[in-house]
Length: 403
Ligand code: ASP
Ligand code: MG
Image (tube, rainbow, N blue to C red):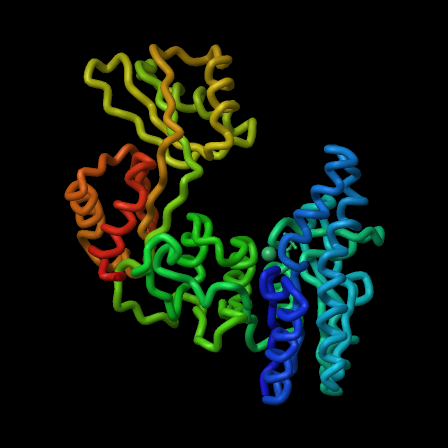
């Protein structure tokens, strides 16, 4: 008998039939003798629809009222699911966040879970009850309803798994796990059976959007094992846990790509101490996240070129900041937003020599030009022209034996 947190995402509860199907999954689990806490998202599209309604009143819609509005989506799913279980003779009950309560801290729309009361629900579980809890929301110290950021039901599930001391936290979704690359674009993509938190974080922040990154981070911090699996098939999903327990047979676990980057180059920047700081200080002050930075060696010791990458959404703001920055001199400012970032990720990379060379050689064979490079212990990323994205992903996927 295990204590399990099962989280069902928006598509898993997107229709009444699907909610009935989720009820049958929960029934199977309780029949097997497990204690179940289910965390649910709003029906798919619902949160966006509510957000749109608030915007049709005002773009500045009260944040307090926005949280009251948005939290209603999860409330609906909670009651429908609990009702469906009761209909099947299961002792299920929904709890809204203020009834538990799940205490949060921080501003409306972007709060964080800091604690929750477990006694009432634990008591209910001990009499074979099934608890259904809405994800994505909580209550503040002053008793206001809060929400914890888009995609926040994952974070609720992980927090509940931690505070209730659950044996597992299973994330049910519309894909059957984490893949070695985007299965919609590359049919040869393979499901990964086991992956470390670090690799998962790299893959999800790089574009493989299976789970909310901050929820994976919390799971890593408290060592809560996760499993991502499909609501619609019975296949095994992907287990996510700490690195020590993983036996690496491959150096590279996955290839991720994202098309939301842009590259900026300052040509002919003065080559003296302090210049880089002068370029980047106003960017950081304006919350612009700089990803990769490359400075060419200056041959004349007078000027150099500085290239860096940022999120594409930040491009116009970045260009404006640089143009208005009178602390720096340069000859020309160029930019390119038709770029994409391709990354190979693998915790086994550290112990395998020659990965960098193999990646560059593979790209060269496809005549793909590398515009910028960055590395970390478990990741190697390059910026290339957007048109070459699929060609690059395919090539890397094949040369690192992921096909
Ligand atoms: N319903 C919320 C959202 O769409 C939370 C979630 O789905 O995790 O962002
Ligand atoms: Mg969601």
